[in-house]
Structures are given as C-alpha cells and as structure tokens.
Image (cartoon, rainbow, N blue to C red; front, side, top):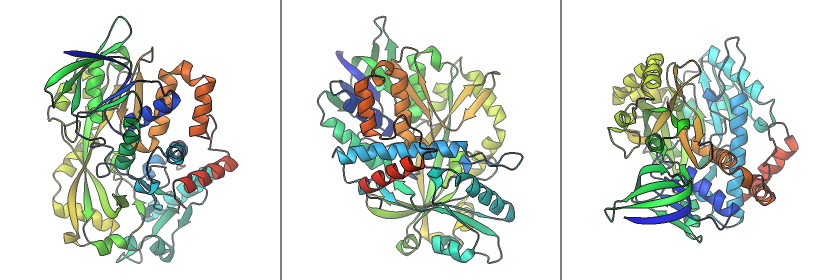
Length: 493
C-alpha cells in the first residue's frame, strides 16, 4: 500500500470542493492539494445541471424563504441573508472571469427573470405583503408587483394562457435574476486547479476511511477503482464535500463534533418539456407556494434553464423517497448511516415529521396523470405528450438533536468542524450551490483562523470579493457598485 503526504485533501468533486480549492490556491499558491472523487468526472451529483435547480438562489422568487408569521407579518431575514450571499458568489465568479481563470461566463450564468406567482385572495395578499417587506431593502430594489392580468401576461404568457379570467392572481418580478449551470462552473474551476502546481485530482477514487493520528495529521484511506488498490494519504486538513455521502464520512472520522448527526434522503424528479415551441414561449423562473407538509426543496416552479447552450423548460420538482444518499449511491446508505449515537434523534425526527413522510409517500405513488395535474396549475395550456419525466438529484437533509434532546430535521446547509480546524464537513442541501462562496468563507474562518486574519489573506480576499468584511444589506451605494461590476464582468447586461 502506497503512502503519500499533502497539505489539503478535498473529498468530492462538486461545487463546494471546487470553490474551496480555488480559494486556497489563490490565497496560498504553495499549498499541495489532493482531490478525490469516486465518479469518473467532476460534478456528477448535486452540482450537475440536471440534478440542481440552478436558480441562482437569491431569494427573489423563493416564497419558502419568506414565511408568514402567525400575526400576519412576513419574516424576511433569511431572504436578506441569501440575497447577500448570492451577491458574494457573483463577485468571486467575476474575479475568476476577470483573471481568465475560468471560461466565458455565458457558459455557466445567464440572465433569466425571477418571478413569484400565486392565485387566490389569501395568497395574493401574502405576496403583496412580501413585496412591501422585501423592497424596503436595497438588495430587492427594482422588484415589481402586479395583480393586473395584462401585466402578468407580459411577464409569463405561458403561465397565463388559458387561465380562468376571474381568478385573483398576483406576481412579482426581478429582472436581474439569473440561471446558473453549476456543473459547468464546477468543471471550469477544477480545470483551472488541474493546471496549477502541486494540485492532483483523482477520479474513480473513493475515500473509505479517515483516522486522526497522534501527530495531529489525518490519515485518509483511498480506494483506486481503476487500479483495484488502496493508498494512504496523510494531510494537515480534510474537507468533506461529498454531498449525501458526507454523513458516512463524518461518521468514519469519529469526531465528537459529529456525534448525533443523521441524514434523511429526499429524491426528486422533473417534468421536462420536449416541445421547442412551448419552451420559447417562456423565459423566467416562476416559483409558487409549496403545498402544506411538503419540504422546502419541493416548492413548485416552471423554470427556464440554459443547459449546455440550449434553452430548456422544467417543471417540478416532484419529491420522492429512496434510501440512497447519492443518485449513484446504494440502497443500503440509510441503513448504514444509523449508529448508536444518532438512532434516537433520527427516530425522534421521524416521529415529529409524520406529515412530511405522508407527503413523500403520496409523491412516490403519484401516477403520470396526477403529476400532469400539478403542471396544469402553472401551465393551463400544457399538453401531456409535450413533457417527459427526468430524474433529478438526491438530497440528504440534516437530522440533529436540539437542546431538549429532540431530533430536528434541518432544511439548510451546515458546516461541522473539529475544534482544531483540521477537518470540516458540509451537510445539507438548499440553497447550497448558490451560496457556496459564503459557505467556504465560513470554512476558511473556522479552519484557517490565523491565515485569514493575516494582512496578505485579507488583501487577497478583498481583491476577490470587493464587499468582503462589509454588509450589503444597508449600503445602497455599495450594492449598486458591486452589481454594476458583476453584471458587466459576467455579461449579464
């Protein structure tokens, strides 16, 4: 068995590892970095365009980010945070483009309006309150609201075609919304990394074990599927960005910070339009309200996508349940993840989320005709034969104990790290890829505290992200300056 040493090990070749690796190599060109990915190419799981919603989640249209409180007000705090995080992501991508580190930006990001659409008097009232609450913040400047059918028809003719004229409807629109192909972006960043000195990217390599040595180093055992052999890599720092498989690797690392964590897998499907005439009638991402009991990732939307230079139209996602933690995973994944320390929170979370379980069962047993009925709510003129079912990506939601010992099912992303900062793992799903830059900045802060506070790193981070260490939420001048820069650099004007 061969032994190797390196400074950094990144497990999983998705958007998170690509972002962290690119950060680290730009902050310290002398770092030796090794990437291990069990598939034969990068970004085949949640980062792939067909597996990822690709919205460029900026909270412009996602109604689940702005819940209505019991007394009727709208909680916009999460929306403000996500909107700012997406602006940070665009700055980092702009830096990479401006330095010619990655390709023509139009290959991975395009301008597509973000819209919300609702019907029924109560939902119309909710959307108007949401609009008024959001537009008090500079990040949502330019959002439009209308309950006029003619105006809404000009925004989304496909959605309004054949709709009942007496039905109360309302919509909002943000013209500066984007569509992002995270698969292409991920592969571009790995393409850049592969050209750098002391960076090695290993495909068809599966990490099978992690062990902390007395020396403080991590010993990573890796299986090479092509050579049918194992190797051991010793490293100062490990990042686990392996999507649904991260929970298994966290358990193998056996760190106290990871005790009690479990995972709940949720699969997804899309209806994809095959009629080019219909595809061309729609150019927007139109999000509606999730049904009661459904997970946030199942918010229905009729979605214009640009995938590999071709315009596509998707509707969904339809949720489902499988015991796999990855699209290319094993049906034993869920069973293997159950350990003594997490069985209680997992059972507790299951008990407290019975409506979700029922929702997933209902989704699994849906007939094609029932799925089509859901589509008709958003596209009343849809024809059954114009749409085909496609498998989407696999998500594993985080389960953990709260302070009362009750298992809680989380729907966001979470970074877990060791006290000494030598290992970090990312768990969870949405908004995920869209906020990868902010999430990886959090990893740098937690795991490289002395370096990130150095003058050299601070200056470089400001070069990469001009708003770094500043808040965009209340600075109109800075937001306008940043958006002008990123829109020009990313060719979104």
